[in-house]
Image 1 (tube, rainbow, N blue to C red):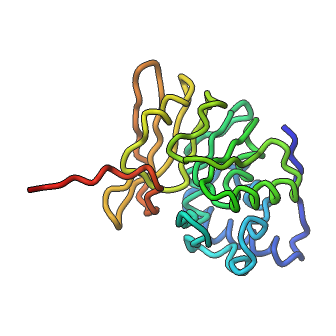
Image 2: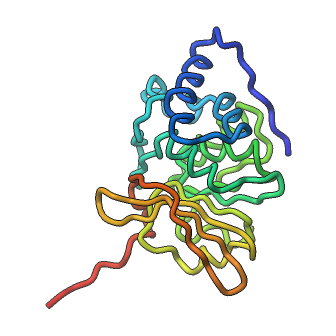
Image 3: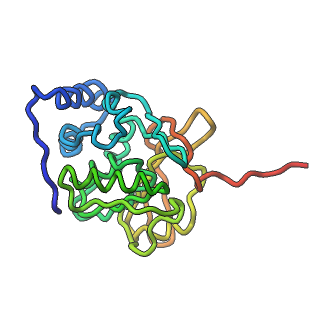
Length: 230
């Protein structure tokens, strides 16, 4: 792993904002993993946002990114708790889906061996790769493509992170998870309510474990096909 640690003095306003986010949002949301907390304190979220959103980098809002398709980032505390449930280890090869401008992938890069992020918008991919380079991450990269198709050419992955909600998971995506691997994301129950879940993949079976209630936008390609009644 080629990862640069971004320790900054707490006199730095951004470092203070990160500490406030961790203490006021993340720790109070049952996130206790110290390695993950260290990443949250080290990675500058503002580097992974457009300039007009940088001032809100450490708010608890689910920020909407410009561009197409629409992308609303998970609130930091939801993302942190989802990553904690993923139990990331240094041997993991991670597929990060719908990661926006790469903040979640940057967090994961300090905990895993490799992270491949897939986004549909080429401009977001370019911005994510620039941000990875800016903070010295050598084991994270973003590629453009159909999110629902994952990154089959680079499979298998031991962990898939869905940065949003799904009603169904494409079979082609599940096939990219190595035996013994897992997936975390938000299963959508309706327009208001969702539930973060972890799926564990064994030979021929997929077990699902509920984690906590939350809400996230359904990612394109992960919605149930519309049904018609006569």
